[in-house]
Length: 484
Image (cartoon, rainbow, N blue to C red; front, side, top):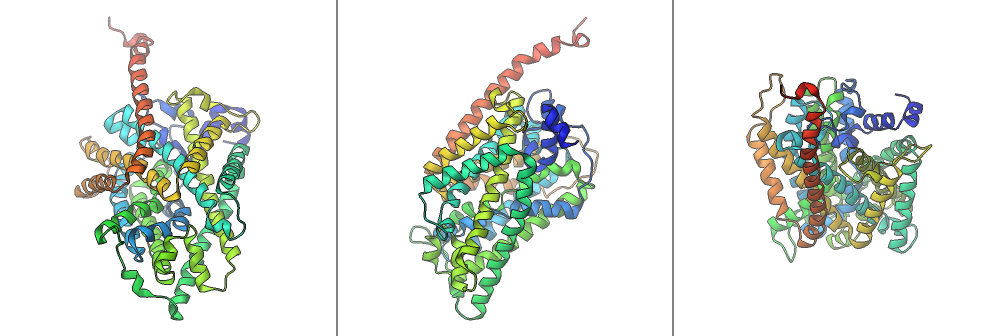
């Protein structure tokens, strides 16, 4: 489909956006509505299988590696102590458990739709609607956390400005770029991704240099626990925050329909990317914990900048720009996903119809962009980065719980085609890990998250009632369906 066609026709633009943002956009497809028509009517029934294993691997890796580690290493140190690497390792293990469920479902049902499709298929349309809303809410919360992080120590290395002013200007700029067009946003993303990955490599290299010259303290890497928490409690509290750094793999299931050999390629790419990201994060945790005193690391909102300062040789201002690019890129991509997801759900009547309005000329969902940006602004001005990150984790735990339950239910469905299967204990452990992590989230985070989840439940219930009421009308619309 050409861009010109997308500009001329709203329905074509919607399909074009689905193809471009397959991993981030089509989560609402095929999981909402009793007749499973959903968003599928806007896209072709069979997508071209053009994604190879290496391409899928790098796609998932790019989805996982991102701004979270630039921001949260210090907060993890504050929760767990100097052994920053340990909560990151625990979070990787927990992510791999749920990733196993995604791998089984994506290879059993290699169709676009993702988490909402699986939940809708196993638990019904209302569950699919709730999962889709939680994905949307998680995106909005993530943008809020990243906008707050943008206004912190990395920016202060360049200039000192009021946090509220920075957040407002930052979100306004991102929303404007989002409104301006998809192509321009994606071009900015390509360059920014290279910059942010390069920044992580620099931090690992500088950390190794400080260790080799004898200025680090490797003993801090065994310090686990704080004055408030013991070893286990501190590790798990840090793991909740560290989990934020691994989110992103769940959206890759939407590409399964476009993978050349999904039953073989998807598990390899998924677990390969998770392990690679885990390796990078482990090295970052080792470098930060050994090089920077724990108290200083915990009190910094620009923790990787502390590693650069300890090593010397790289100007603070230069690395601050790299980190700000990483944070801004993460916020931009997540903002695009959130606005398109809200637009798609509105087009299907799952959210207020006004969110489906498109800007003439640019053909971008300007109402959805403005509304999601305003909600992110409200959250950013009323919450700190760590609390917002935990809120995102809470929302995604709802999604992951539904997926782990779905894989157990859908195993009862007869399926002749060969597909990847995880050991039966894996989804049970994934479910248990999600339920356990629920108990490690602070009451303040539960309050904020419960409001968002409650809104999702209301929309899901309203959509379920609407679907039930419209069912007799749909049956009556087809003469063949009437009794004699």
